[in-house]
Length: 345
Image (tube, rainbow, N blue to C red; front, top):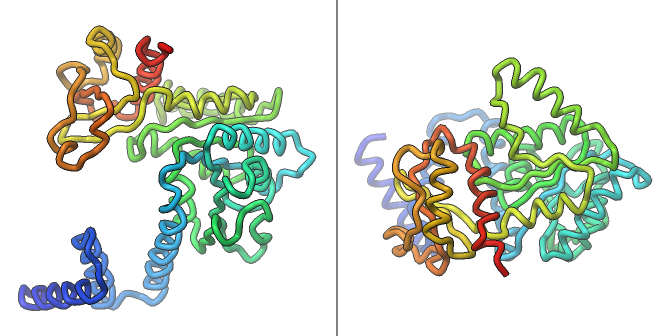
């Protein structure tokens, strides 16, 4: 596009945004409009345009669903749609969801039958959120989901999976088929590569079950031995057959750790309790291999955080993380949660 045509498009988009009352984040909105126009100018295939249009529409609907619930912690529960109500796994999902709802968490599911229905039943309709998929052979969303307030339907698996993961602060995976495996491995990939913030992940089985133990064996004997993953890549995951342990893992991950933010090459970890200098020094000594240089230190909010009024009331630890070690952040966070300052009454 020539400079003149680009200037004309910018002027027309600016006028459109003014007339439609778009005020916030105008640069990003203009970028989306420019991209849409570009797709048209490129002579993009109709099917490709339908994919792009439907994906953007679905994401907007999902964002609208989740926006009013932003202040409530959420956990996503994955598992098979084929699990029957008399299966012990059904009870595990239902009991886990009930316990998490009792602790103030909302439960996100794929809104289908089986494990998804069990989790929605356990949480109750007011604390359940459903992100369903439209398939020619799938049943309607289960009755435990509030159809008007807490349900959004997706055409594409990739947009559905985005919303099943984007809003949650913890994940519980129960045994399932290809879909459950896809979701579980996506979670592990996002954590391993640092494309998602560290989150607690639980692989929950029935009492005495061997489903996830079989996965551990496969990872150890095939993936680790073949050099495809590191020997500690599965350490960030809790494998258990205990509902109580699963719930404790999800809620305990946030005992002291609150959130993180990158400021240049510095990583800021926001906490709930103020650590001591001695605790920061101990963390530096223990996790020195994660640092590019320097130490883990207490800090006041950094200038960009102050400018954005970003969680200024919380105490902080600041470090220069080796980017190749980003997948190991969960180990540091767990240590932060066990600091004496965090566990003191």
